[in-house]
Length: 199
Length: 199
Image (cartoon, chains in turn cyan, red):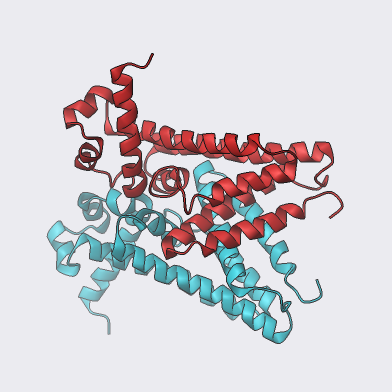
């Protein structure tokens, strides 16, 4: 059974995650968070010990939505290539349908936190490691089943797939033009096809 | 002749650009900038009308270093593929030798400013457009000279090259591991070779 306190906490995270994802951790002021959450400042501090704690849990909330999308996309797919395409499509959708407003929470948190916020950086690193491992495992499975070439490199493929899509998201958001992402998705699908055994 | 005022301005930009590039525009406080510049707050405002103006000119300073690197790398190279490789290497070097501390100023500014700071976003967009146009022009020249295949697409190539390298920079900085960038550079060089006529 979900208590009233848990419902309030959840609602605050739903409402504050887009604030952090659009303005950044440093750019999101307490007054922005008060306004978004609908609670008084003291009410927020009843549920979260600090702005940092609220930011960390807001990140987890947004990362959890992405995890759900990967699970849903993969549940319907068979075969390594089809599953890799599904991962590309989930990340490609970040341009038009981010998990919360403001784009990719992992990219945003990674870029803001890399020099400045160790606890947030650690959160972003864990989420990103999960995505890289997922892609690496799909490549490994595809090699073992014989669908992908023995030369396919799980680590290289996972770096290239994530780098290309996150970079394309940045370009599309900067130029307000989804074409960069469409080109990245197309490029990666041709690249992944080139990893098929016998190609 | 360079006046004392111009020398001071230049020194402030050299010292403040790394502060903005590591902490972000919102994260860089006036006291950070006072400390880095060695001037009093009033001294900074004698040279720059606002924190935003200082941030914009700090961005231009860092973007100018990148422009100088592209010019230097291209001056020594002949042929489309060799010139495209030179561009890849300049961006690949961002991991180990950023123009100012904190990684790529265009990536950092793009991600922080896309929802929040229109004037900074415009600056990042102009710099990024220059990089995309440079790559597109090299591909176009290579098609015209017959070195690259008629099927090579200047816009797709420029989106993919920049996206992959900027995304790989983010991964390498997040994981404190240059391997993501090395894999991206390797992948792009194979991809660019596949655009050669007769490949």
